[in-house]
Image (cartoon, rainbow, N blue to C red; front, side):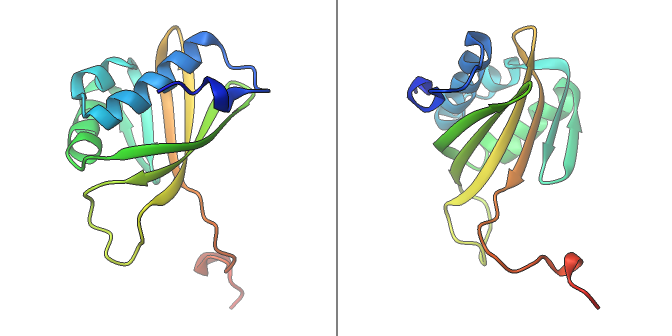
Length: 138
């Protein structure tokens, strides 16, 4: 997958673009070892506020929650904010979400250092207007 057309107007390095493109491609192909190799040894993944630190935890997360659940990413947009590449994508998979329609839209925040992903933050991109319960006044 070539994300170059989605990157017009942003200043991401070739290194960042290559890693993000390979992450999307390897996710779709279900290539566990390729995905694991994209991360630095001391990397962090935060998936919906759950932390995974280092290669062993990240590889396990990739195995069970990305490759195991046959996650597919349909990239909708990409932008850069300071040192972070933000990918907005529809995500589908074999995960159990009986009350959540698929595809779901997420923002994936990639931080790259020395040709490896050092941080990946994944957050649901909410499009509904109601305030979350935690923000409602009593």
